[in-house]
Length: 113
Image (tube, rainbow, N blue to C red; front, side, top):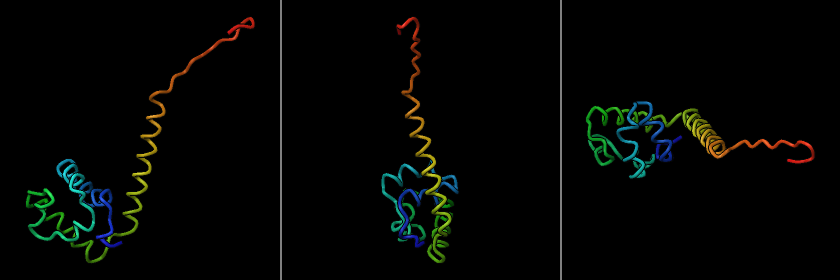
């Protein structure tokens, strides 16, 4: 899959999470809408436009981007991200459903409830 076709969620999952940079840059990248097209345009010191001020972090992300520019993003990685997102959504939906769940026991005795 070409780098420039990745969504915002996929970019964060492939660039930030594996390098444990989600806490540092995740909110900024979400606010800026950093998707595959934006990452594909950034090279060298231009990572500061995406809020990456640390040179070692920029070098790490630049190396990852360069690898994906040349060989593309392995489809299995993107599918794994989709599977993980679907599982998180299911868990959140289940938690929301269980949050307001209450059990009420009515007893029927002597023809009365």
